[in-house]
Image (cartoon, rainbow, N blue to C red; front, side, top):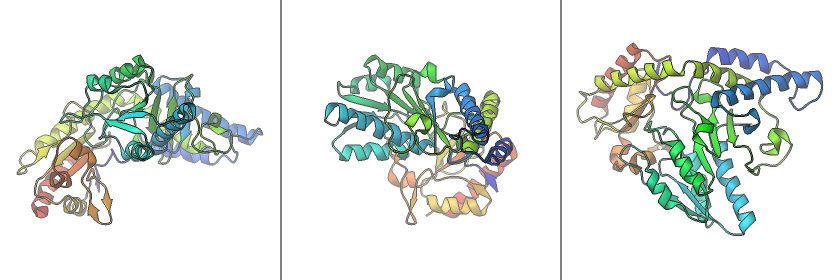
Length: 377
C-alpha cells in the first residue's frame, strides 16, 4: 500500500512509538505526589515543554487534550458561554465556510441558539481578504476563528495580519493550526493569536492527543467539569504517554521541517506534472500553499469509485468529503470555492509526507490515470 493520506493522519514515528512505550510503562498518575506519580509527571511536563518550545510559547499556556476537534469546540463554546454569562445575550462570531467541521459544527450550533455568525468569502483557492475581516468586525464580535492551512486545499492564510486586525478591535482570535506543524512554521507569538488548536497525529505523534494554546492573561472556562488537571481548564487524568510521545515527535518534525517542505514541494510538482495528461483533470489546491496537499477534480468520474479503484491498485488517498450512509457528500470546502456539487463529488485529495518517495508518487499518478478510466460514469 502506498500511503498518500498524510493530511488525514501521519503514521506514528518510530521514535514516538518508543517514547510512548517507555512512558506508558510508568505506573503512576501524574497528579499523585508519590515517587511513581512524580516520575509520570516528569514525562508529561517534558512532552508539554517540547511542544511549547516548538511553537515559541510558555509551557503554562499549553493545555493537553484529545486533539483538534476538542480544542476547536472548547474555544468556540467556551468563549460563547463566557460572553453570554457576562452580557446576558448572544453575540457575533466570524469564521469561514472552509473551516474544518470541528469549527463549523459548533458555529452552526451557536447560530441555532441565537448567535449571529458571519462567514467570510474565499477566493478561488480558499484564501481570505484581511479587508473583508476588518469590515465584518462589530462591537458585539466575541471571536474570530480562521484556520491557518486548509486540510483540503493547502491554502495558507496570513494569520499574523488577520489576527492583528482582530486585536486592533480587541477581539480574540482563534486559529486551527492542525495542518501546519512539521511542514509550515508555527510561531504563535509572531501570529499574536489568542487561541490555537493542534493535533499530535498530524506530525507523527499518537492519535487522540492534542494541545490548546491559550495566550497568557486570557480566561477560557472549561466545557467539562471535574478535577483540577490542566489548571482546571481541561479536567481529567492526562495521557502521560501520549503527551510525551507527541513532544518527541514534534521535536523531530520541527528539526526536519525545512527539508520536509523542500521534499514535499518537489513531490507535489512531480505529481502534478505526471497527472497533467489525464483528460479533463483540474487542479483545485493552492499552488503557493502547503506542499503537503494536491487536490484534483476529474469531471464525470464518480469520487467513491475513484477511491475504491485506487485502493484496489494499492493507493490510499482521500475524497476530501465525508461518506455518510454510503453516499458521497460534496466537500463543503470545494463547493465554498465555487465547484459544483457533481465536480466536488468527483474530487480527490492526495497528501504527502517526508517518507513519501518519488517512485510512490509516480506509481500513484499512473494509478490515478487507470482509476479515472474505470470510474467514468
